[in-house]
Length: 217
Ligand SMILES: C[S@@+](CC[C@H](N)C(=O)[O-])C[C@H]1O[C@@H](n2cnc3c(N)ncnc32)[C@H](O)[C@@H]1O
Image (tube, rainbow, N blue to C red; front, side):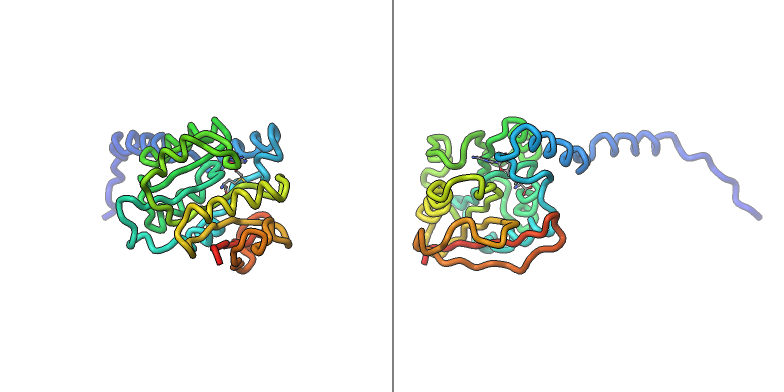
């Protein structure tokens, strides 16, 4: 005998609607935000869309094992944008409360504070000295710095200062992790007394990019 077709209980529809409402914002709206930011400030944004998760996970893999972190461990992200790489850091095991995010765009800062409420979000210029950053990092240990800054839009001295300055804040050998679309490197390691490791090109990103890891020599 054919079973009777029960109408779906109405609560299911309600639940579905609620799940749709509550889900994290669609990636497409991040793309739109990013594109709008690029139209307004192309040199600050340096890219028309957020990085892919493949690139973010490749960057996060260079962060030292978070299982060895303690309560004073911090990971600093410069130019987190909409938080693709930030999420990859969390997925790698970095506690959200250990994250310090420095982002220039006030709009992205609002988004980052909503998405990562336990992280320290600082709105400001990553190339400039920052009292707020010094305060957040006082007495803490910086395990890694991870950067999405479009370094090529700045003169050599500024690039060297941001990478060299970050290495000077960390224990010897700790990584400054940067992505780049370019064939040349944004900072020559010998200029800042560092060594440089580069990843394979990550093709699952538009445009393909690679990860550069600077460490004090
Ligand atoms: C190429 S996007 C990378 C965004 C994100 N990390 C990603 O991979 O999708 C560059 C980001 O750096 C931010 N940025 C650019 N210059 C900055 C500065 N001087 N200080 C802080 N953030 C900056 C931009 O607002 C933007 O969010």
